[in-house]
Length: 243
Image 1 (cartoon, rainbow, N blue to C red):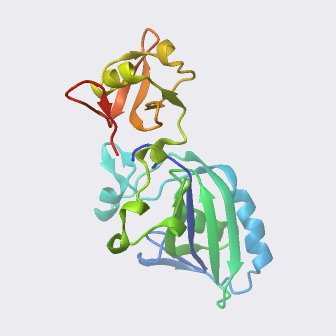
Image 2 (image 1 turned 135 degrees about the vertical axis):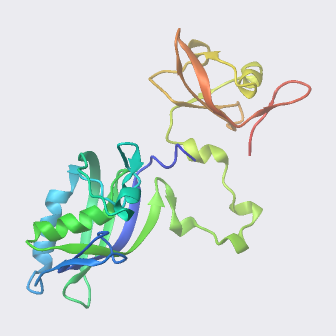
């Protein structure tokens, strides 16, 4: 799962113009109000331009980012506000649509992992000459995994389960034969040249039936070592891939 969490994310939500909050979303206390009823949809769409592409973003105080060994949200609960260094993120798309309320806009955002949508909402308000906060946020996709394909747990059947290899489908892959599959099942270091691994890794290691055995990373002397092993060695030899 750790490899899937780094994939781009998609969100839907609402940006409320004219009010800032302590958490940058609807759960916080009001910290400021602005008369923004005259802001037009065209102005809002134009303002998203400066918040699209590769941008620098300051993590919010309610985030899990660590400063001085403590998470920001812990400091925030203690009433401490600290300087935070901006971080590079990428916003692939930032779409806004008006709603029945002139100060509320529906948003659809696709962004890199590590992007804070509540900060985008707050920065949008600032770009429009006032303030704003986020509400009704919902993540709709992580990489190729979308809520459109989600199944409620109480309706989950064996046919709904995907191969584990799907979690690392975005990684470069190498295929190993039966002998090396057993080495992988024991978590042993293997030769990069022997499996034709190119690039810097990490690599998804699969058997000849395309079943995931593990994920490997670069190791000195043209070798590779396991980060995760999902295969187990069979008593009679060979590897049994994780399902």
